[in-house]
Structures are given as structure tokens and as C-alpha cells.
Image (tube, rainbow, N blue to C red; front, side, top):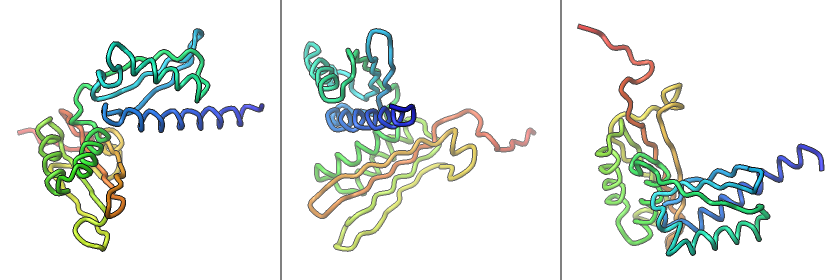
Length: 197
């Protein structure tokens, strides 16, 4: 097998592992996973909001996940480490999943968005933007935006400071899209000129 095909195969395998973990650990606030090859096997770092739900009672859930990763995806001797996200309110993916779960439970989309916006801003974010789209109040699909603070749209500050995530949730009326952008807190905003008195 030539090198290009091997890279493609590894990329597809990583994507499939990520999709499986995203589905299996949805309630645990799964954010991402890193796969690292080591001489004794594959080390998997799982970043999640609630590590106790990933580990399970006496490690039963994590052993089951390791067994599935070994059988279905062909990872050699998977060793799973779980890392807790230090400040989940400043993570766009966690907040997007939180809004999607709230809407799926029956909470009104505006209420869910405003609660999430308040939580993000009270965690110390520079700004936040939440975009919810779908058949929100009628048969016609539309989009609503909720904003607070400063959210950079382009340039270097956007690359450095803005965390962005989008999630879909399937309801009776159809698919709703939830997109969250969070400008992380910093002492000095790059590119902003301050006049000293």
C-alpha cells in the first residue's frame, strides 16, 4: 500500500472513531479525542465535560469502549485517558450540545439560547453569538441570532480567540441547527490600539 492511501485510510479511521465516540459519549459532554501511536499500542485522549460518565462504574464503560475500538476499528491495545474540560462554559462544542439537548427536551429555543448566553458571559467570555436555524415557530424555516459582547468575524483575532462549533438536532418538525461562537477572555485584544493618558 502506497503512502498516500495509508494516510487516507488512517484519516478515515480517525473520523469513524470520532463519530463513534461522539455518539456513544453524547451525555458525557464529549468534545474531542486524540489518537497517539505508542510502541505498546494506541493511546486515546478523550476530552469530556463529565469524565465520570465516560469511565462508568468501576471503569466498566471505559473497558467496553476500549473493546469496541479494538474490535470494530482495529486499534491495537487501546489505552484510554479521560481529560476534563476546565471551563465548559467557554467551550463552543459543549454549549452547542447543551442547547441542542435542551431543545430536544422541549425547552423553547429562545429560552435555551438566552440561558446559554448568560452562562457563557458570566464565565468571563469577551462575547458570544448563538445561531439557531430550522422550523422554529412555523412551517417555514428561518434563522435567529442571539449576541452579547464582542465576537470577531475575521482576521487574526478570530483565528486566535474565537471558538466555533455547530450541532444538528432532529425533532418532529425537522432538523434544527445550532451554531455557537465564543470569544475567549484575554487581557489585551490583538490589533486594538490603546491610548495612554
